[in-house]
Length: 60
Figure 1: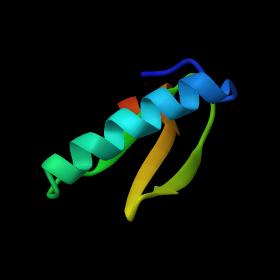
Figure 2 (figure 1 turned 180 degrees about the horizontal axis):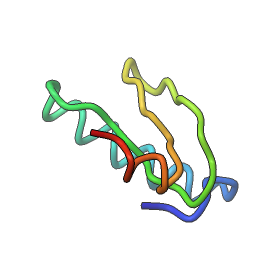
Figure 3 (figure 1 turned 180 degrees about the vertical axis):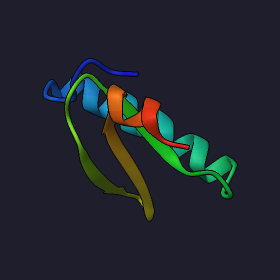
Figure 4 (figure 1 turned 120 degrees about the horizontal axis):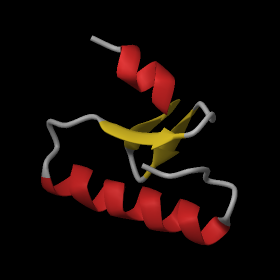
């Protein structure tokens, strides 16, 4: 979980770690949970969903 991804250091730390995970475990979906930001990130051939915590908690 990340409060926000506006800081470049935070963005690279969160996305970089998730891309490494997705390379090692290709069957998984990548999510970054934030306070109130939503987007989709394409990184190194992987799609990472960035969703606000309230929306993530309401998913099935």
